[in-house]
Length: 143
Image (cartoon, rainbow, N blue to C red; front, top):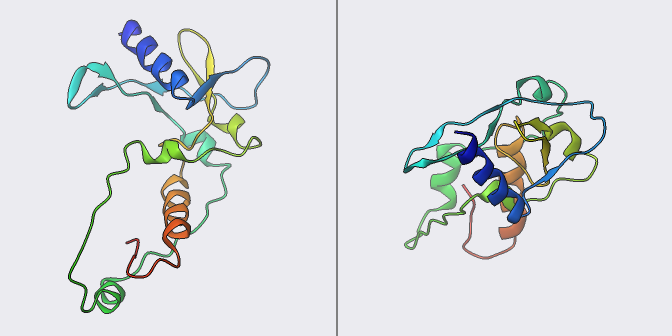
């Protein structure tokens, strides 16, 4: 199992998603490493952010109701779906926010440089980023 964790840590480091932490840190969360559903020879690094999430101020994203969606899509004939692989990892964390994502492994402490799963506000931050990206494009709606 340790070898699989090391491989995943290396992959995340090579993709500029995590970094090694040196020195003292106010936050350290444990990890859980379940096998990936489609590839049981690899593991997923899941940081238990329950304690850290108590200190995170959530950003709210207004989710449209079904009535809103139907009204906005009236007359639409073309629909697309984007698959954003590791979408959260596309968003960089502010340097002042990285420290709260620190986690422990059998090798050393690491922290995320990019938005990670487990942060209570991650879905809202991600949805707001997508909304800002497509804002003003005719015929495009993020739902």
